[in-house]
Image (cartoon, rainbow, N blue to C red; front, side, top):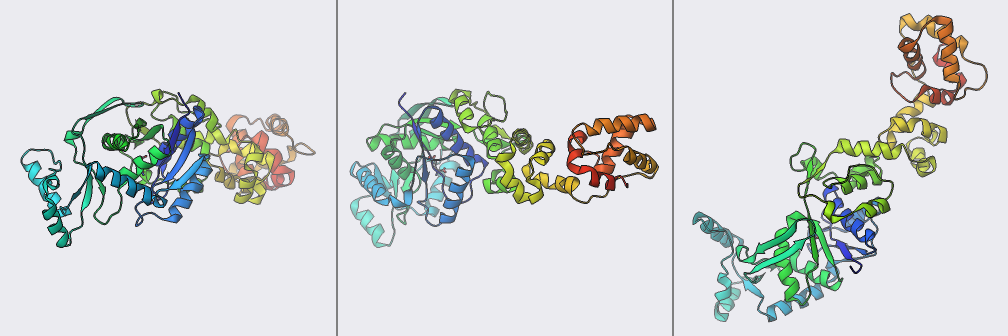
Length: 446
Ligand code: GLU
Protein backbone atom coordinates (compact mmCIF):
# COMPACT_ATOMS: atom_id res chain seq x y z
CA UNK A 1 0.00 0.00 0.00
CA UNK A 2 1.26 3.52 -0.75
CA UNK A 3 1.58 5.79 2.28
CA UNK A 4 -1.87 6.82 3.44
CA UNK A 5 -2.97 10.43 3.68
CA UNK A 6 -5.80 10.99 6.13
CA UNK A 7 -7.56 13.96 7.58
CA UNK A 8 -9.40 14.91 10.72
CA UNK A 9 -12.03 17.49 9.86
CA UNK A 10 -13.63 19.10 12.90
CA UNK A 11 -16.06 21.99 12.68
CA UNK A 12 -14.90 24.72 15.07
CA UNK A 13 -18.36 25.19 16.51
CA UNK A 14 -17.46 23.93 20.00
CA UNK A 15 -14.70 22.32 22.02
CA UNK A 16 -13.27 18.90 21.15
CA UNK A 17 -15.00 16.15 23.10
CA UNK A 18 -14.25 12.47 23.59
CA UNK A 19 -16.24 11.43 20.51
CA UNK A 20 -14.40 13.54 17.98
CA UNK A 21 -11.05 13.01 19.67
CA UNK A 22 -11.51 9.31 19.06
CA UNK A 23 -11.96 9.97 15.35
CA UNK A 24 -8.85 12.18 15.33
CA UNK A 25 -6.89 9.53 17.21
CA UNK A 26 -7.86 6.66 14.93
CA UNK A 27 -6.86 8.71 11.88
CA UNK A 28 -3.59 9.68 13.55
CA UNK A 29 -2.67 6.17 14.69
CA UNK A 30 -3.42 4.69 11.29
CA UNK A 31 -1.28 7.31 9.51
CA UNK A 32 1.54 6.92 12.03
CA UNK A 33 1.54 3.14 11.89
CA UNK A 34 1.69 3.16 8.07
CA UNK A 35 4.25 5.96 7.72
CA UNK A 36 1.50 8.19 6.31
CA UNK A 37 0.38 11.76 6.73
CA UNK A 38 -2.24 13.25 9.06
CA UNK A 39 -3.89 16.49 7.93
CA UNK A 40 -6.02 18.77 10.07
CA UNK A 41 -8.82 20.32 8.05
CA UNK A 42 -10.90 23.01 9.71
CA UNK A 43 -14.50 22.70 8.45
CA UNK A 44 -15.52 26.30 8.95
CA UNK A 45 -17.84 26.85 5.98
CA UNK A 46 -20.58 27.60 8.50
CA UNK A 47 -19.29 31.08 9.23
CA UNK A 48 -22.12 31.83 11.64
CA UNK A 49 -21.33 29.04 14.06
CA UNK A 50 -17.57 28.64 13.56
CA UNK A 51 -15.23 30.71 15.71
CA UNK A 52 -11.50 31.36 15.68
CA UNK A 53 -11.53 30.81 19.43
CA UNK A 54 -12.84 27.25 19.01
CA UNK A 55 -10.33 26.63 16.25
CA UNK A 56 -7.42 27.77 18.43
CA UNK A 57 -8.72 25.72 21.35
CA UNK A 58 -9.06 22.53 19.33
CA UNK A 59 -5.51 22.94 18.04
CA UNK A 60 -4.24 23.34 21.60
CA UNK A 61 -6.18 20.23 22.62
CA UNK A 62 -4.82 18.13 19.75
CA UNK A 63 -1.26 19.24 20.50
CA UNK A 64 -1.74 18.46 24.16
CA UNK A 65 -2.84 14.95 23.19
CA UNK A 66 0.19 14.66 20.90
CA UNK A 67 -1.96 14.40 17.76
CA UNK A 68 0.23 16.72 15.71
CA UNK A 69 -0.54 17.34 12.05
CA UNK A 70 1.67 17.52 8.98
CA UNK A 71 -0.51 20.15 7.40
CA UNK A 72 -3.63 22.19 8.19
CA UNK A 73 -5.99 24.41 6.25
CA UNK A 74 -9.35 26.13 6.58
CA UNK A 75 -12.27 25.50 4.29
CA UNK A 76 -13.24 29.16 4.63
CA UNK A 77 -10.13 30.02 2.55
CA UNK A 78 -11.25 27.82 -0.30
CA UNK A 79 -14.65 29.06 -1.49
CA UNK A 80 -13.23 29.72 -4.99
CA UNK A 81 -12.42 26.01 -5.37
CA UNK A 82 -15.90 25.00 -4.16
CA UNK A 83 -17.49 27.46 -6.59
CA UNK A 84 -15.44 25.95 -9.43
CA UNK A 85 -16.53 22.43 -8.47
CA UNK A 86 -20.17 23.52 -8.26
CA UNK A 87 -19.86 25.08 -11.71
CA UNK A 88 -18.43 21.86 -13.06
CA UNK A 89 -21.33 19.85 -11.63
CA UNK A 90 -23.85 22.34 -13.05
CA UNK A 91 -22.19 21.95 -16.43
CA UNK A 92 -22.66 18.21 -16.19
CA UNK A 93 -26.32 18.60 -15.25
CA UNK A 94 -25.62 17.10 -11.84
CA UNK A 95 -26.35 20.17 -9.72
CA UNK A 96 -29.82 21.62 -10.15
CA UNK A 97 -31.69 24.54 -8.63
CA UNK A 98 -34.71 23.92 -6.41
CA UNK A 99 -37.08 26.60 -5.21
CA UNK A 100 -39.17 24.86 -2.56
CA UNK A 101 -39.24 26.56 0.82
CA UNK A 102 -38.55 24.60 3.99
CA UNK A 103 -42.30 24.55 4.67
CA UNK A 104 -43.12 23.21 1.25
CA UNK A 105 -40.52 20.47 1.60
CA UNK A 106 -41.87 19.58 4.99
CA UNK A 107 -45.36 19.27 3.56
CA UNK A 108 -44.11 17.02 0.74
CA UNK A 109 -42.38 14.79 3.29
CA UNK A 110 -45.54 14.48 5.36
CA UNK A 111 -47.67 13.65 2.35
CA UNK A 112 -45.21 10.98 1.22
CA UNK A 113 -45.17 9.45 4.70
CA UNK A 114 -48.96 9.48 4.99
CA UNK A 115 -49.12 7.54 1.71
CA UNK A 116 -46.65 5.00 3.04
CA UNK A 117 -43.84 6.20 0.78
CA UNK A 118 -40.32 7.04 1.90
CA UNK A 119 -39.91 10.82 2.37
CA UNK A 120 -37.56 11.18 -0.57
CA UNK A 121 -37.38 14.44 -2.52
CA UNK A 122 -39.58 14.07 -5.63
CA UNK A 123 -37.26 16.01 -7.98
CA UNK A 124 -40.11 18.30 -8.99
CA UNK A 125 -37.55 21.05 -9.62
CA UNK A 126 -35.97 19.02 -12.40
CA UNK A 127 -39.01 19.52 -14.57
CA UNK A 128 -39.20 23.30 -14.16
CA UNK A 129 -38.87 25.18 -17.44
CA UNK A 130 -36.55 28.16 -17.78
CA UNK A 131 -39.59 30.45 -17.76
CA UNK A 132 -40.92 28.93 -14.56
CA UNK A 133 -37.53 29.34 -12.91
CA UNK A 134 -37.29 32.95 -14.06
CA UNK A 135 -40.77 33.60 -12.68
CA UNK A 136 -39.88 32.09 -9.29
CA UNK A 137 -36.73 34.18 -9.14
CA UNK A 138 -38.67 37.29 -10.11
CA UNK A 139 -40.88 36.55 -7.07
CA UNK A 140 -37.71 36.84 -5.01
CA UNK A 141 -37.07 33.12 -4.49
CA UNK A 142 -33.42 32.09 -4.32
CA UNK A 143 -32.68 28.49 -5.29
CA UNK A 144 -30.92 25.91 -3.19
CA UNK A 145 -28.92 23.40 -5.22
CA UNK A 146 -29.16 19.64 -5.15
CA UNK A 147 -26.79 16.99 -6.45
CA UNK A 148 -28.51 14.54 -8.79
CA UNK A 149 -27.85 11.04 -7.52
CA UNK A 150 -27.53 8.28 -10.10
CA UNK A 151 -30.29 6.12 -8.63
CA UNK A 152 -27.89 3.18 -8.70
CA UNK A 153 -26.25 1.29 -5.91
CA UNK A 154 -23.01 2.67 -4.48
CA UNK A 155 -20.78 0.00 -3.05
CA UNK A 156 -17.57 0.02 -1.10
CA UNK A 157 -15.67 -2.26 1.15
CA UNK A 158 -15.59 -0.43 4.45
CA UNK A 159 -12.44 -1.07 6.47
CA UNK A 160 -14.54 -1.40 9.63
CA UNK A 161 -18.03 -2.37 8.45
CA UNK A 162 -17.12 -4.65 5.56
CA UNK A 163 -19.03 -4.60 2.26
CA UNK A 164 -21.47 -1.69 2.08
CA UNK A 165 -24.18 -1.08 -0.47
CA UNK A 166 -26.34 2.02 -0.57
CA UNK A 167 -29.25 2.29 -2.95
CA UNK A 168 -29.14 5.95 -3.98
CA UNK A 169 -32.68 5.75 -5.34
CA UNK A 170 -33.77 5.52 -1.70
CA UNK A 171 -32.09 8.83 -0.86
CA UNK A 172 -33.10 12.42 -1.45
CA UNK A 173 -30.75 14.25 -3.77
CA UNK A 174 -28.54 16.01 -1.22
CA UNK A 175 -28.55 19.79 -0.96
CA UNK A 176 -25.02 21.01 -1.61
CA UNK A 177 -25.67 24.77 -1.58
CA UNK A 178 -28.23 26.54 0.58
CA UNK A 179 -30.41 29.30 -0.76
CA UNK A 180 -28.19 31.94 0.82
CA UNK A 181 -25.32 30.56 -1.29
CA UNK A 182 -23.53 28.88 1.65
CA UNK A 183 -22.12 25.37 1.30
CA UNK A 184 -23.18 22.39 3.32
CA UNK A 185 -20.29 20.15 4.32
CA UNK A 186 -20.84 17.55 1.57
CA UNK A 187 -19.26 19.16 -1.50
CA UNK A 188 -16.33 21.08 0.10
CA UNK A 189 -15.28 17.89 1.85
CA UNK A 190 -15.05 15.99 -1.45
CA UNK A 191 -13.26 18.84 -3.22
CA UNK A 192 -10.69 19.00 -0.43
CA UNK A 193 -10.26 15.25 -0.18
CA UNK A 194 -9.50 15.10 -3.91
CA UNK A 195 -7.06 17.99 -3.80
CA UNK A 196 -5.26 16.78 -0.67
CA UNK A 197 -4.96 13.29 -2.13
CA UNK A 198 -6.79 11.75 0.81
CA UNK A 199 -6.45 7.98 0.56
CA UNK A 200 -8.71 7.00 3.48
CA UNK A 201 -11.73 8.76 4.90
CA UNK A 202 -12.04 7.65 8.51
CA UNK A 203 -15.00 8.96 10.48
CA UNK A 204 -17.99 8.02 12.60
CA UNK A 205 -20.72 5.74 11.31
CA UNK A 206 -23.19 8.63 11.36
CA UNK A 207 -21.61 9.52 8.01
CA UNK A 208 -22.29 6.22 6.23
CA UNK A 209 -25.22 7.60 4.21
CA UNK A 210 -23.24 10.73 3.31
CA UNK A 211 -20.62 8.41 1.91
CA UNK A 212 -23.11 7.03 -0.59
CA UNK A 213 -23.68 10.51 -2.04
CA UNK A 214 -20.08 11.64 -1.62
CA UNK A 215 -18.69 8.65 -3.52
CA UNK A 216 -20.87 9.71 -6.49
CA UNK A 217 -19.59 13.29 -6.17
CA UNK A 218 -15.97 12.02 -6.09
CA UNK A 219 -16.61 10.19 -9.32
CA UNK A 220 -18.41 13.13 -10.96
CA UNK A 221 -15.52 15.44 -10.16
CA UNK A 222 -13.07 13.05 -11.73
CA UNK A 223 -11.52 11.61 -8.62
CA UNK A 224 -11.53 8.10 -7.33
CA UNK A 225 -13.23 7.84 -3.97
CA UNK A 226 -10.83 7.15 -1.10
CA UNK A 227 -11.12 4.02 0.97
CA UNK A 228 -13.64 4.44 3.74
CA UNK A 229 -13.75 3.44 7.39
CA UNK A 230 -16.77 4.24 9.53
CA UNK A 231 -16.32 3.58 13.22
CA UNK A 232 -19.15 2.78 15.62
CA UNK A 233 -20.12 5.59 17.93
CA UNK A 234 -19.32 5.87 21.61
CA UNK A 235 -21.77 4.93 24.31
CA UNK A 236 -21.66 5.61 28.02
CA UNK A 237 -20.81 3.16 30.79
CA UNK A 238 -24.52 2.41 31.29
CA UNK A 239 -24.74 1.07 27.74
CA UNK A 240 -26.97 3.95 26.68
CA UNK A 241 -26.00 6.49 24.05
CA UNK A 242 -23.42 8.93 25.33
CA UNK A 243 -25.12 10.92 28.05
CA UNK A 244 -25.30 14.62 27.54
CA UNK A 245 -22.51 15.08 30.03
CA UNK A 246 -20.22 12.49 28.44
CA UNK A 247 -21.09 13.57 24.94
CA UNK A 248 -19.90 17.00 25.80
CA UNK A 249 -17.00 15.91 27.99
CA UNK A 250 -14.44 18.25 26.50
CA UNK A 251 -10.71 17.89 26.38
CA UNK A 252 -10.46 21.23 28.19
CA UNK A 253 -12.47 19.78 31.05
CA UNK A 254 -10.46 16.55 31.24
CA UNK A 255 -7.20 18.47 31.16
CA UNK A 256 -8.40 20.81 33.91
CA UNK A 257 -9.23 17.78 36.05
CA UNK A 258 -5.62 16.68 35.64
CA UNK A 259 -5.96 13.71 33.28
CA UNK A 260 -2.84 12.55 31.43
CA UNK A 261 -3.12 12.69 27.63
CA UNK A 262 -1.94 9.09 27.34
CA UNK A 263 -4.72 7.76 29.53
CA UNK A 264 -7.30 9.44 27.28
CA UNK A 265 -5.53 8.19 24.14
CA UNK A 266 -5.09 4.68 25.53
CA UNK A 267 -8.75 4.38 26.44
CA UNK A 268 -10.07 5.86 23.19
CA UNK A 269 -7.74 3.69 21.10
CA UNK A 270 -8.67 0.45 22.82
CA UNK A 271 -12.39 0.60 23.59
CA UNK A 272 -14.53 -1.09 21.00
CA UNK A 273 -11.56 -3.15 19.74
CA UNK A 274 -10.44 -6.72 20.28
CA UNK A 275 -7.43 -5.49 22.31
CA UNK A 276 -7.55 -5.29 26.08
CA UNK A 277 -8.15 -1.83 27.47
CA UNK A 278 -4.77 -1.07 29.02
CA UNK A 279 -2.63 1.99 29.42
CA UNK A 280 0.18 2.56 26.95
CA UNK A 281 3.08 4.91 27.47
CA UNK A 282 3.24 6.39 24.01
CA UNK A 283 1.22 7.08 20.90
CA UNK A 284 3.88 5.20 18.93
CA UNK A 285 3.02 2.07 20.90
CA UNK A 286 -0.69 2.55 20.23
CA UNK A 287 0.08 3.15 16.53
CA UNK A 288 2.10 -0.07 16.30
CA UNK A 289 -0.87 -1.97 17.73
CA UNK A 290 -3.52 -0.25 15.63
CA UNK A 291 -5.43 -2.16 12.96
CA UNK A 292 -8.85 -1.45 11.47
CA UNK A 293 -9.63 -5.15 11.62
CA UNK A 294 -9.52 -4.98 15.43
CA UNK A 295 -12.39 -2.46 15.56
CA UNK A 296 -15.70 -4.20 16.24
CA UNK A 297 -19.13 -3.38 14.93
CA UNK A 298 -20.75 -2.64 18.26
CA UNK A 299 -20.49 0.73 19.96
CA UNK A 300 -17.40 1.51 22.02
CA UNK A 301 -18.12 1.92 25.71
CA UNK A 302 -16.60 5.02 27.29
CA UNK A 303 -16.43 4.70 31.07
CA UNK A 304 -15.01 7.53 33.12
CA UNK A 305 -14.14 5.11 35.93
CA UNK A 306 -12.06 3.10 33.48
CA UNK A 307 -10.36 6.30 32.33
CA UNK A 308 -9.46 7.08 35.92
CA UNK A 309 -8.03 3.59 36.40
CA UNK A 310 -5.82 3.95 33.35
CA UNK A 311 -4.79 7.38 34.53
CA UNK A 312 -3.72 5.99 37.88
CA UNK A 313 -1.58 3.29 36.29
CA UNK A 314 0.10 5.85 34.02
CA UNK A 315 0.69 8.19 36.95
CA UNK A 316 2.27 5.47 39.06
CA UNK A 317 4.96 4.99 36.44
CA UNK A 318 5.67 8.67 35.70
CA UNK A 319 9.14 9.78 36.72
CA UNK A 320 9.56 12.93 38.78
CA UNK A 321 11.20 14.88 35.96
CA UNK A 322 8.12 14.42 33.79
CA UNK A 323 5.81 15.97 36.38
CA UNK A 324 8.04 18.36 38.37
CA UNK A 325 6.56 21.55 36.95
CA UNK A 326 2.98 20.40 37.28
CA UNK A 327 3.62 19.33 40.89
CA UNK A 328 5.06 22.76 41.64
CA UNK A 329 1.93 24.32 40.19
CA UNK A 330 -0.23 22.28 42.58
CA UNK A 331 1.93 23.26 45.57
CA UNK A 332 5.61 24.29 45.62
CA UNK A 333 6.21 21.74 48.41
CA UNK A 334 4.95 18.93 46.15
CA UNK A 335 7.87 19.40 43.74
CA UNK A 336 9.98 16.95 45.72
CA UNK A 337 11.14 13.70 44.18
CA UNK A 338 10.89 11.56 47.32
CA UNK A 339 7.42 12.96 48.00
CA UNK A 340 6.24 12.19 44.46
CA UNK A 341 7.60 8.66 44.54
CA UNK A 342 5.77 7.95 47.78
CA UNK A 343 2.39 9.58 47.18
CA UNK A 344 1.81 8.88 43.47
CA UNK A 345 0.59 5.37 44.38
CA UNK A 346 -2.30 7.01 46.20
CA UNK A 347 -3.34 9.33 43.38
CA UNK A 348 -5.53 8.67 40.37
CA UNK A 349 -5.11 12.22 39.09
CA UNK A 350 -2.00 14.29 39.56
CA UNK A 351 -3.67 17.23 41.37
CA UNK A 352 -4.64 14.79 44.15
CA UNK A 353 -1.05 15.10 45.42
CA UNK A 354 -2.24 18.38 46.91
CA UNK A 355 -4.17 16.47 49.55
CA UNK A 356 -0.96 14.75 50.72
CA UNK A 357 1.19 17.88 50.95
CA UNK A 358 -0.09 18.86 54.38
CA UNK A 359 -0.12 15.26 55.53
CA UNK A 360 3.59 15.14 54.92
CA UNK A 361 4.88 18.67 55.30
CA UNK A 362 2.18 20.66 57.06
CA UNK A 363 0.11 20.81 60.18
CA UNK A 364 -2.46 18.10 60.63
CA UNK A 365 -4.74 17.04 63.43
CA UNK A 366 -3.53 13.63 64.63
CA UNK A 367 -6.29 11.07 65.09
CA UNK A 368 -5.72 9.59 68.53
CA UNK A 369 -8.55 7.91 70.42
CA UNK A 370 -8.61 8.49 74.16
CA UNK A 371 -7.76 4.90 74.96
CA UNK A 372 -4.71 5.11 72.68
CA UNK A 373 -3.16 8.21 74.23
CA UNK A 374 -0.77 6.38 76.59
CA UNK A 375 0.18 3.90 73.89
CA UNK A 376 1.02 6.70 71.44
CA UNK A 377 3.01 8.56 74.11
CA UNK A 378 5.02 5.40 74.80
CA UNK A 379 5.59 4.87 71.09
CA UNK A 380 6.96 8.41 70.84
CA UNK A 381 9.68 7.58 73.35
CA UNK A 382 10.73 4.55 71.30
CA UNK A 383 11.25 6.35 67.96
CA UNK A 384 14.81 5.38 66.91
CA UNK A 385 17.48 8.03 67.29
CA UNK A 386 18.95 9.89 64.35
CA UNK A 387 17.59 10.57 60.90
CA UNK A 388 14.46 8.64 59.94
CA UNK A 389 15.11 6.27 57.05
CA UNK A 390 13.29 3.65 55.03
CA UNK A 391 14.14 1.14 57.83
CA UNK A 392 12.86 3.24 60.68
CA UNK A 393 9.19 2.21 60.54
CA UNK A 394 9.85 -1.51 60.89
CA UNK A 395 12.56 -1.06 63.55
CA UNK A 396 10.30 1.27 65.48
CA UNK A 397 7.10 -0.79 65.26
CA UNK A 398 9.09 -3.88 66.34
CA UNK A 399 10.35 -1.99 69.36
CA UNK A 400 6.83 -0.69 70.17
CA UNK A 401 5.41 -4.20 69.84
CA UNK A 402 8.07 -5.63 72.17
CA UNK A 403 7.45 -2.91 74.73
CA UNK A 404 3.62 -2.74 74.66
CA UNK A 405 2.57 -6.16 73.39
CA UNK A 406 0.35 -4.53 70.74
CA UNK A 407 0.35 -5.91 67.23
CA UNK A 408 -1.65 -5.84 63.99
CA UNK A 409 -4.17 -3.10 63.43
CA UNK A 410 -4.01 -1.86 67.01
CA UNK A 411 -0.34 -1.15 66.47
CA UNK A 412 -0.04 -0.10 62.84
CA UNK A 413 -3.34 1.70 62.31
CA UNK A 414 -3.08 3.56 65.58
CA UNK A 415 0.33 4.92 64.63
CA UNK A 416 -0.78 5.71 61.08
CA UNK A 417 -3.76 7.68 62.36
CA UNK A 418 -1.60 9.57 64.82
CA UNK A 419 1.08 10.39 62.26
CA UNK A 420 -1.09 11.20 59.24
CA UNK A 421 -4.53 11.99 60.66
CA UNK A 422 -5.98 9.42 58.25
CA UNK A 423 -6.81 5.74 58.05
CA UNK A 424 -5.49 5.28 54.53
CA UNK A 425 -2.47 6.47 52.70
CA UNK A 426 0.96 5.71 51.36
CA UNK A 427 3.23 3.05 52.79
CA UNK A 428 4.21 4.21 56.30
CA UNK A 429 7.78 3.01 55.89
CA UNK A 430 8.16 5.34 52.94
CA UNK A 431 6.22 8.30 54.27
CA UNK A 432 7.76 8.42 57.75
CA UNK A 433 11.19 9.71 56.61
CA UNK A 434 9.40 12.46 54.67
CA UNK A 435 7.39 13.49 57.73
CA UNK A 436 10.69 13.61 59.63
CA UNK A 437 11.50 13.36 63.31
CA UNK A 438 10.34 16.77 64.41
CA UNK A 439 6.87 16.60 62.88
CA UNK A 440 6.50 12.93 63.84
CA UNK A 441 7.19 13.63 67.51
CA UNK A 442 4.87 16.62 67.50
CA UNK A 443 2.06 14.49 66.03
CA UNK A 444 2.71 11.78 68.61
CA UNK A 445 2.24 14.42 71.24
CA UNK A 446 5.87 14.21 72.26
N1 GLU B 1 -16.85 18.31 9.65
C1 GLU B 1 -17.39 17.01 9.48
C2 GLU B 1 -17.86 16.50 10.84
O1 GLU B 1 -17.31 16.94 11.84
C3 GLU B 1 -16.36 16.10 8.89
C4 GLU B 1 -16.82 14.74 8.53
C5 GLU B 1 -15.77 13.99 7.74
O2 GLU B 1 -14.81 13.54 8.36
O3 GLU B 1 -15.89 13.91 6.54
O4 GLU B 1 -18.77 15.74 10.93
